[in-house]
Length: 474
Ligand SMILES: [Zn+2]
Image (tube, rainbow, N blue to C red; front, side, top):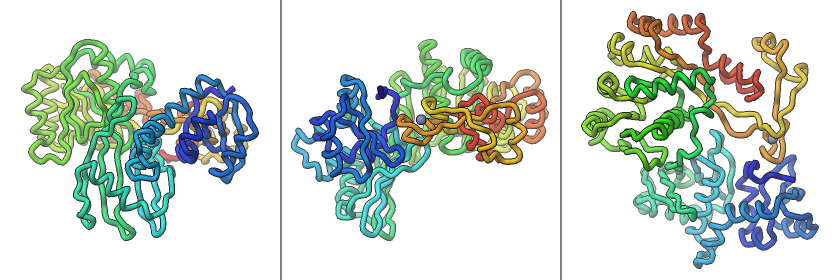
């Protein structure tokens, strides 16, 4: 029997049927697998296939699941849209469509929504787990009313179609949760393109033990955080999960004691009640440096600075971390050692950095193998690059073969992989003597501190991530 808690919803399949039909017939088309539409039902019913033929060109396969769970899942997927229809909304109306798009994107945990005009159609795509996926292709006729609707609610000028604009609004979900939506428009040759970012996610699911760090690193990290002073830096490319890692560390602190935690961000990505979040986005009056200076007058225990981009912010952050504050931040750099040289290049004195930096982390996100369809594979059938062959001489390789829970992809969600440098006396000395990035990296490898690539390789060997993710590091 299918466990509905474990499935990954495929929004184009879920919302291809009218909500009222799904509720009335108690069915949930939830994904495509091997070109078939999988439909969750509580008992097999031949007439379902007949009913659904109108909405899908693909063959239909019914999968039995628990009746009560199915009712809850149908309510979660379609309830908000049914509620909206009861309130007199026309399903074809732009308001109904704007709500449906946000609801569907939120349901599948999309980070961004793209609405792109083409010659005859409007393509709506979601970014889910870092990848763009088609949600719907609609007639171009609806494009201008859909775009105008989002522009009105996000405070943009709808008469201005030739210049890029940006705006934002708070979307209230039926659950009562508020989602902060950032909207940006840009003129393209086929019309206005809209990109929307969904902000304000809750930190409820974040957990320091589930970050993907080795247990000994988690222990070190916790002891550093409990010291309540010093600097913890995270680096990684855009979309590498840096902010999520910092929020995970803050959540650990929130659970430890009643700290005064203040964040300065551009923009605020998570919604947390117990902390003060200051936003510096598009705000020339409030820069990271000026906000940080003001925040220090509010007696903080912990300060999270979204990003250190300039010497002024770096200097204030270092000073704060020397005077009894714990400062968490990110910087653009591609390794734990590069964080150190980046801050030094900005003009931070090595001895100050050595005295304040406690942990330097570099991270990136990789796909996880779906646990439901994970299988050991014959190494001969895998086209491993020559450089990796010797690594798997006596280690099995695992792959996800694709199942109803992972929409046939073989992967399910993402996890972070890390390079973590805990700055002890040895490394304080190295930093203080201005070691170069290459020298530091070589010494880290010599002392057994794995690089991001080595951490990824270890996780492939543990059967957590597919070997193909290693291609990112070749
Ligand atoms: Zn699977």
